[in-house]
Length: 371
Ligand SMILES: [Cu+2]
Image (cartoon, rainbow, N blue to C red; front, side, top):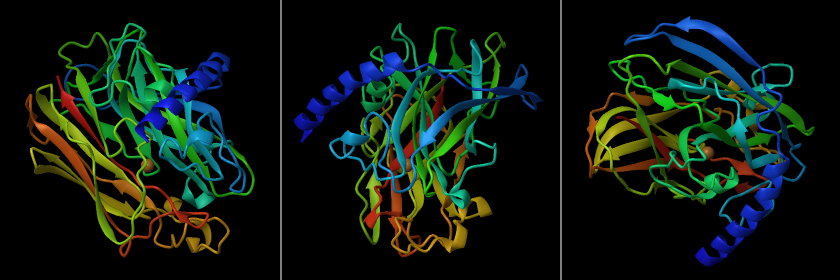
């Protein structure tokens, strides 16, 4: 299977060269700048929301779209109807040119600027933000050249800085001393890979918004941040076949090559999960707990019973609306082994069903280490 996958990856890469060449970078975005927020440490924290789109999502009975949708099964994923499946958008707008990013949050909006979520049949299934530089200075800690780097055409490498599922977890990496941030340089490029889902009959146009907190690159005393991506599916599409009952999904183990404070960490898993346990040398450092349906946005219209129309199963309790995040949880040393385990239990929370089949699941954690 590995060889087959590799073969198809090459075919997909060739396809991509064509699609990248035709794709405008981050066109059609609008931005707003908010007044500076509160910030400790040195310097002023600025907040900026960058709007990416319009992004197309097919109707729930229409085939998946995206340059890889036809290859999804071979790549180990599912691209059911109503999905924009792992769509790459290379070289999109950056919030700032030379700066330290201290926080990010993702959101999804309708064409009329309403929040798009389960309540109106639109899912920010996931998005990944990768930072690349043609000079090769951006290398991912756990995956130097995986599917996502191939997807965005970053042959010199790309570092996964941030990701969000529909729960839209807010990230803050400023640390206890609030003088940490992910350093963005002038030559860096931001790239997106996104997957969106639509439960409406009609195709939809949506916008993804990323709200960034950042400080100027000239701020004295700032320290850099290394993002680390732990994943059950290595360098692939992050999808793993769902099982039934109570089960666990482990990520690969990452042995740290860096040392510094663990500024923040949190998990991502799919409906059916109770929590993601993040461990260092086998000891828990964070229990990232899933909560369901905390706001009406996360509860489908009519309670969400699946009447065989391709819906998402019994969602009457709602979908995952948050994963808790842990901040300032000790130090990472060179040689420390990091791993996350996602716990699923479909007797507590139903898993997603798409056209009668169980939707694949994920087990991901992000760990941010100060440098
Ligand atoms: Cu996911």
